Image 1 (tube, rainbow, N blue to C red):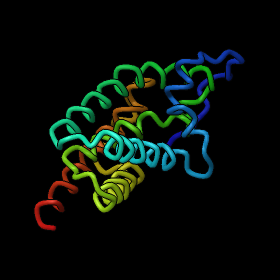
Image 2 (image 1 turned 180 degrees about the vertical axis):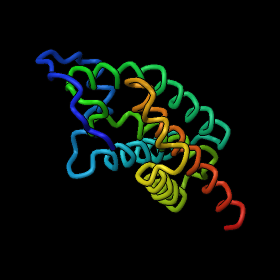
Image 3 (image 1 turned 120 degrees about the vertical axis):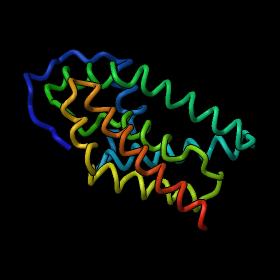
Length: 167
């Protein structure tokens, strides 16, 4: 993850953007805020399953809705938080990990083994950033912050889907 300084940090923080960008504070966890964001996403998925008892179809639709919201609000939130922090891709911005993690969970049965598999695979692809994932970081502002994790989530989804076929 690139944390290069791009300008002076602002004393002003746009509350909605920082709240959303940090996924309600998960990105403030240390060490490894990205992992905390991914864990928060998996826990929210599991909590929805425990409390809601959704059908696989309803879970899929709920994840799609969550992904859409993280992209619609996450890209501008990441842009504002990055600008206001003076950093290109600040580590505390984890809404991108949430989107990528939820993409990885698409189609996963609601159990701890599939949740753990999705978490490990997503973190692996998010950290290693195989081609062309790393190139997406070059996109401007929030687009680059978020879309590289979307691509990592798609890679992880592909592998998780193959694992589900065979195991």
